[in-house]
Amino acid sequence: MSIEGVYVAGMGLACALGNDLASSLTALARGGVQPSPVAVSEGFRWPVFMLPTQDGSWAERLARTVRSVAAQAGEGAGGRSSPLFVASSSLDIGNMEHEVQDLRLGGDLQDFAGLVAGALGWQGPVFTISTACTSALNAVLAACDFIHSGEVDEALVIGAELGNRFTVAGFGAMQLLSPDSARPFGAGRNGLVLGEAVAALRLGSRAARWRIAGGSNVVDGRNPSGTEASALIAMCHGALSQSGLSPRDIDLVKVQAAGSPVNDAIEAQALKQVFDTLPPLVSLKSLLGHTLGASGAAELALLVACIEAGAWPSTGYAIDGELGIALSSQAPARLRNILLNVVGFGGGHASLVLEDCTA
Amino acid sequence: MNAGSSVAWRTVAHFSADPLPADWRDQLAHRLGRRPRRVGLWTELAMYGARCCLDAAGEDALPTGARLRVSSMRGAWGATHAGLAQLDAGALMPFTFMQGQPALMLAEVGRCLEWQGDAGFALCRDPQQLLQLSRIGAGSAGLLLGVVEEERNGEKPRSEWWRLVPA
Image 1 (cartoon, rainbow over the protein chains, first blue to last red):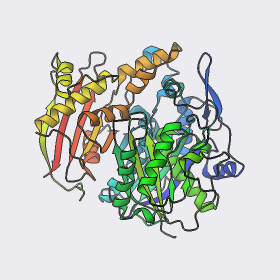
Image 2 (tube, one colour):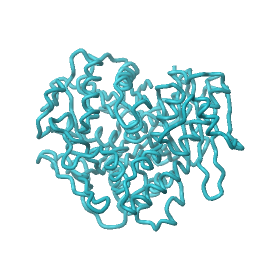
Image 3 (cartoon, chains in turn purple, blue):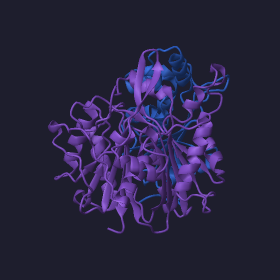
Image 4 (cartoon, each protein chain N blue to C red):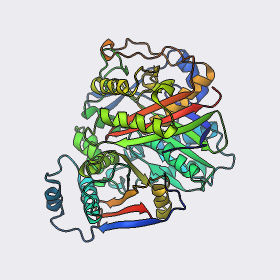
């Protein structure tokens, strides 16, 4: 998809690091936070990066957090008749866990977006985008389509992944989770750590610092629980082509790497096939966890906040030397075009090119 | 070139599995040359409808540049319900968990259409808005659009598909 003139007008984030971007940057500067153990059944606990503790029910917590991140993004300035895209993998399954069995699944898959829209008093069309880990990036691409078509001037993307035992148990049963910590591209990495996050991206046609230059979504069903090299390469080439860029124009890659022994290695090898010389790489999942359907929006918001604040998400573990890659320990000196990659469950591979128009 | 909202669209093929033939799963297995494994009923319904629609359009494979878009209000209801019950019982639930994921359905539908490309799962209470979302930004190869619903509490199953291209 080629995008002209779609800009990030505002951002908000609530994640394990903090309830907003400022507190998240403060926690990041202190070295991050530790995941909390979540019990899924007798004797089975997995670490999860949880949002700071709040009172109230699951739905009340959702509503309060959505209102907070939307306010951080500057929502409320007249955009509520524009489209709202709610991106999530787990949707409201966490809410259902508290229901008695006979009342579960009595509604439908749009109910979660209805809760989000209700929290915001949203009047415009409300869409759910649910493509597992690529949900939020696909929501951004869909919002860009609407704005680019001239149908609307603004759209709001809410990426939301709130705590539930169902998803933790499912990933655990598939032996995808680390019992201790997330170490993307790390030596001795042993799986991913899930995370809660709610992120807001307010997109618009009015010029701003950050422009979404292009993007790509490639689904390949051959490896439904992992990264497929040919799809990742096609995704990168697609995003670059749609942005009118070549690999040498990219100054930073925000990688998918979640800490999987196999998928991280496939990603590293595929990136080497896209780039003759690898640009600096950055990873955020050791700080946020893998926030699944929210990850595209959450990681975009945190990375942009880091760049704007002059902070940098460093890792505190050794990188796997056999991968032949490194994670950047500081912001690149030249930083105009950023490739943000997300790879998901179900063979989904999505990418955005973000341009700093002031660089 | 992308097809904007002002572009007219042509329906190349429309398929609705109504009524669903008693032997639809055998028909799908025969058409694919294999019986789908580890996929749930919802995904199999999607695969059946998508394959039949593409056959009706006279296409062996979905063109690379086409979009695949699927919508479903109930989703993989049975697999999710079973997974939640297994969670309550403290049981492992790898297959029912996977079967409940829309992304896994997209992957399997893409695979049965011998296709790698832009697939998405989206919902909206207004069907016209959903159609518009699917069309905006789609390229000249058009899209394959499906609505797939599992049977639930007497509500009939549905697998209805359209192969659409810019006119």
